[in-house]
Amino acid sequence: MENYDKASYNGKSYGELLSNTCIHFVPMVNPDGVSISQFGEAGIQSPEVLNLVRGSYPNYLYQGLTRAEYGRYLQRWKANARGVDLNRNFGAGFGGGEEYSIVPGSMYYCGVAPFSEPESMALATIVQTYNPIMVINYHSSGNIFYWNIYGNPSAGFNSFFADHISNITGYRKQGTFAPNGGFLEWVELRGNQIWALTLETGIGECPLPPQSYPQIWEQNYLMIPILLNYYKAMST
Image (cartoon, rainbow, N blue to C red):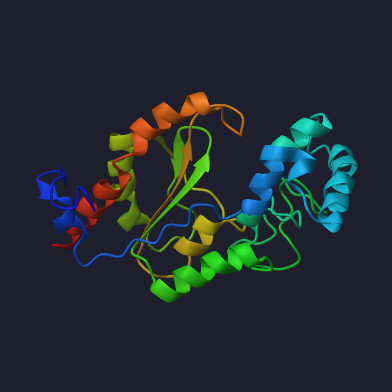
């Protein structure tokens, strides 16, 4: 890498920070949902999925979960192609949460069982296989981050880490909340001591406009060396 030996953070070269370290990037957990959000019906290749998406809209209007017109409803789609909200499909607090859909659709439907979806199972497999010491989960939006849930055995361990990230990014710490099937909740309740956060980047309704990117980049582009430096400082 070009900057492996040249660049540094806090007096340590990137080479030193990356030594004896493995980083796993999952750039897009939900490609099918992103395709629906970006391209609407044109992003759907399966007749079955198209029928599900079209059928979900009147159901969501009836449940009061959307008031948007159909095109905007598709833009706000955050579930996968089966209409399951992946961040409600994990084992901790499955089926909980104040906002809930009884049928598949754009969001809030947890699925038929924890880890019923290939995307959530893929994330769970990565965590169970490698037992990471840190998990940083990027969402949008709000310029806040979630750091703790009720019952988290690593709450004290994670609190100082959360303060550190808040000071660097300017994101506000969000208070403790009850688990409702999310990835962060499941990671924190597995029982392993872990630094784990969900960062909500940007301000405004999703999907965020391209104009939001420069500010998000400015707040986050040093995240990897920051995390590595923090871990190595706390481990010595």
